[in-house]
Image 1 (cartoon, rainbow, N blue to C red):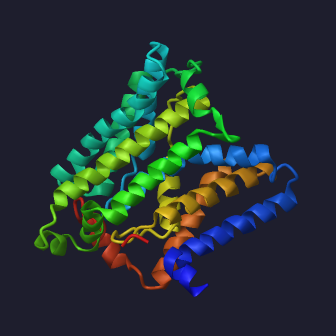
Image 2 (cartoon, rainbow, N blue to C red):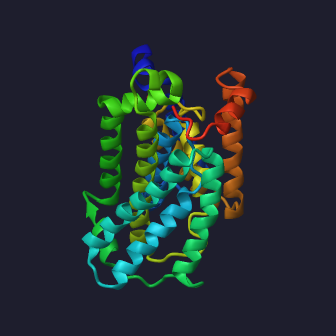
Length: 331
């Protein structure tokens, strides 16, 4: 058992146990929870947050933050939807999501890294800019009734499981290999631990920071393709709570808000726990209005626990937020 803890990590084991407890609890309260249909619904609802959380893990790992990710997904979703309307086909339309997300990620990276503006300030500002862009692109009306081309591809079952889930798993595997087995992964963690030391060690800190935000944008764009495949519409309020959910899931999974410590498995488990709680609460009659409250309370609980263990304090967090693009071990 001790070897398993060392390889996987205590946080991941605790999250896995929490997911099991939540599954058992809601299955006892609601007869509709532990059914094949509902479990597939929970997993399908995880797709977008899995991908956005994946990118957010890298951004937090370098010590950054991005509160505009939900609206970035919205802009990319509009690009996907417009191509579907133009009969561009599922392949081109689906690829338009990560491509558009990557371009928007370049904009975010330029403002944060090249503009040397604190990440929280820059991305809050960009949230407003991107939100206005969504409104203008939609012309004040929903983009709805989209063709089912992408839905047919990503929703197709493989051994009873929608093909979307293996695609998400492949995305996680790619990022895991990059972080664990390439110099870039080491540079991400070195930058997150100490920008100065990383720079003195020969790490191109700005390039690492820039790449992290672009990766996050690509993940948001891929999430947009999944979103369109599932819902076939884009509302003007799209992605409003996704940033909060992504940050909560990533930190819940063991990634440090100060950078330098990451857990991709923890992020996946954090997303799964959030979606299980949200789905279970709906089935037991709790209004969806309370879902952000649960997410926020979980975030406060985890940060409070981290503070209690001395992993960060208010002074270090303040210094962190003041540093433009301040970034920063993969667990």
